[in-house]
Amino acid sequence: MKAFQYTIQDELGIHARPAGVMVKEVKKFQSKITIEGNGKSADAGKLLAVMGMGIKKGMEVTVSADGPDEDAAIAQLEEFFKANF
Image (tube, rainbow, N blue to C red; front, side):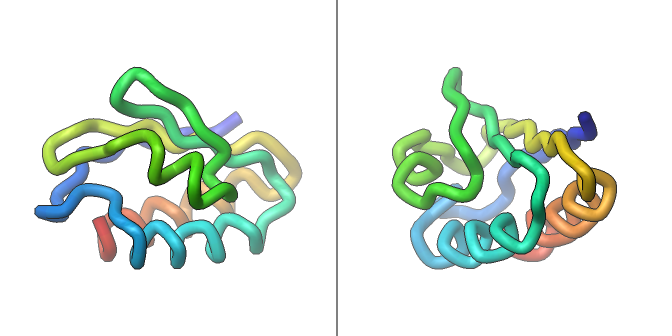
């Protein structure tokens, strides 16, 4: 299992548009990818679950991947979070 932590910088937190794009990125990988934050955990491939976490600016999230392409998944998602959140 691989993981990274990230502090949300976007004024709106994790909101619909970038969260939808994130879900599309997650679905490119075979690994099980989860996001944890605000005392909750969700499958990063399920938009409503991610939106239901209520992640706001300044909150720290942990994204983890477990599976055959976990290294590539974490590398790509870390770049995605830096560019979008």
